Length: 190
Length: 317
Image (cartoon, each protein chain N blue to C red):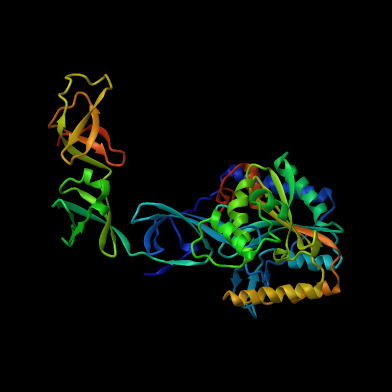
């Protein structure tokens, strides 16, 4: 991989730091008057999700990380791994529980996801911002109550539990924002 | 294409107004406005400043350096008997891009014969109040600032102690360097942020190793460079010196800069023999200061980023 100098550090650039693949979040140039110039850099460790702060002398460089984001179709899970396919090559990738993390709550077969590959292996899975999932279990609906603003928990086909309005019933399909885990609306009838 | 300016009409007007106010300030004090070349055969030797270089053209026998400050030329004017002079000039520094940095920027630089750095600090404070309105003022010797805010004596603490304190405060990984590098880490990462709500803070009498072009004298048993920096609302705004006039000592500092450049794998720079000849002739006792006009405008307009006060910043040209 290429090396990147501090003046090339941009938000989103993927670099290796202490042997870990990282994504640069922020890069601030600081210089105390006449003295040494520094770059104060914020990075997200892509293995752990933790945010690191690190100061470099300006002009120092880091090795680029072989990290790419690919759009893939989610196929299925065998309980141990989750399987994704690149739509143009049909190449399949298996992601482990660490890579999938909480995203498994939003994975629906045949949906497209962003899969982050590090050295060719899935490192993280990002579901679409909105997914449509079926309610498989909730308290019976309160007919006509679309105004009281109350809510109740509902279990979805993926195992996720979200708060939904009282009038919704088992078997209905709802739209959920995967970034917040919040109910958005009933799914549009297609 | 980002063809539109980064600064709004309001900021363009504020800049024009600020330039008028600055010129009136110096005219009222009978200080002469001068212009000196931007392209010179030699550049700055300071290892912390990298120049931009113009490399080709039929008028060029050798590359010329875009000036990182008009200091050397202005000192030649002083040695030739100009009396007090000021200049509002473009200056250039390679690689300096950020919230407070643009590689091409505007410097206000002025020189006062017979002023020491304390008298010049007073005049700088007047100018800042003239442009920004009332601000509280505090003068801090560099030593007292470190003692107050960090409990560290920057002159007498062991090198290892300075480095350890910097490592306590700042995540630096395998950063390596000498004592001044660690003092710079502490200054820029730990002290500067604490100056944000203190109005005008003058820091003066720096360690001799950071004297740059200032005279070095002994104060309380330590060697200090009679240099000052002004921070306004935490923004480093100006750097001034009680100017070194000794030609031999100036030459030794240039040579040492180049030794440090060589050791660090940086390109050595030609030494400005015109300046040294002027010093050999005799520089009147004087103090001088360089103040960042774009940063002054930033403070005057309440903007957070220098790109908001430049018509076209580096990325737009």
